[in-house]
Image 1: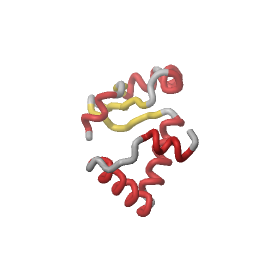
Image 2 (image 1 turned 180 degrees about the vertical axis):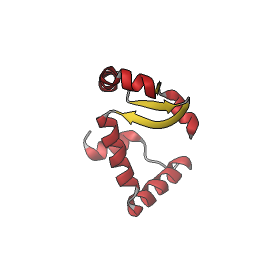
Image 3 (image 1 turned 135 degrees about the vertical axis):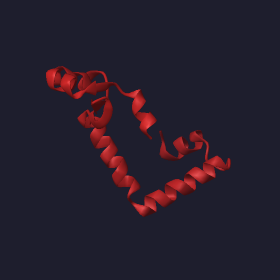
Image 4 (image 1 turned 90 degrees about the vertical axis):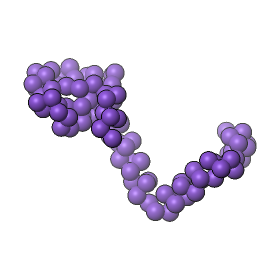
Length: 95
């Protein structure tokens, strides 16, 4: 899981204090998350508000046991080749 952090920029606590305003602007415009380090080790993640809200909503959905059970069943069905082609789904929903 720690290797997932490597996709994000790292910022030390000194640089964070020194450049907080610029870093917050970067979060709005360029990057979604920044790993904050102390003494070279990851300590926290700073993320833009949109990313935070999206992740919070996703966790809320995954906490619902009925939703999770249906999601895992659909994933298993898809993996076994029994999924519904996207064009049929779109036809049913008029997209």
